[in-house]
Image 1 (cartoon, one colour):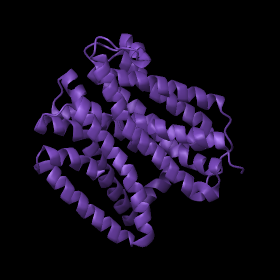
Image 2 (spheres, helix red, strand yellow):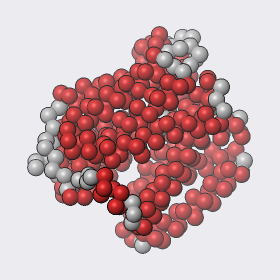
Image 3 (cartoon, helix red, strand yellow):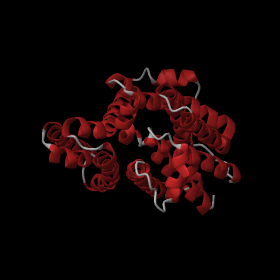
Length: 328
């Protein structure tokens, strides 16, 4: 099929929006904990509520997409995200926040399953690798920016005079005075509704799934989980994602608890730089894999991550400020 540049732009926009919504938790965790007087376990439930949705929805998402197509599935996903975001902005309490995070997570899971076959179709098979790299760059840019947007909102809303900021003037009347961080979910509400509207108005091509992209019956998945290699790959990805998200979600709280730094300033900056440098690391990894064996690259960077993490956790404040971004 001929390259569809408008659809490619829309797909990159979806990648940006997914990342912007997904990777904000690490920045807001301390504020959420303070606002709702949460214990450590209750705070831990926040990322769990979001990411368990990925585990529960990934296989059903593939089935939904095969039955209803990409357009309806993406619209459904953004409406799920909108429902979660608007629910919390109307009822900003802890129990509702858990439900909200789960709904948003379900929407993100459906989108991530749908987006890659659509990217291959819109951009052409021969350009898929290049477009995937661009998508990762866009994804990383959003992860880098979202903590700074959160910081801008919270600090700005804490100022009695918003100045000439149209954004602050719009969100201020809708944000509880004691919960300025809730304003980021007003932004998420708007983004989700806007994206749903754009997708409804867009004409989508028919996506021909490759054999490996087709979701089989439940029996097929059960058979896969009986294979040792599949289980090992699953555990490897589970450990990697758990480490990545675990670090990102606790950076801000760690800096506050052990070094007395503010979540809205130093915490948000460290989280943003963590994701930004991770994007740069992806490109460095692509280059190194061209000139080195993948096992050597994996061993080198695993060892480097362990050393950096040790100094970050047990060193002084400067080690923490520079170490967390370096882990990315």
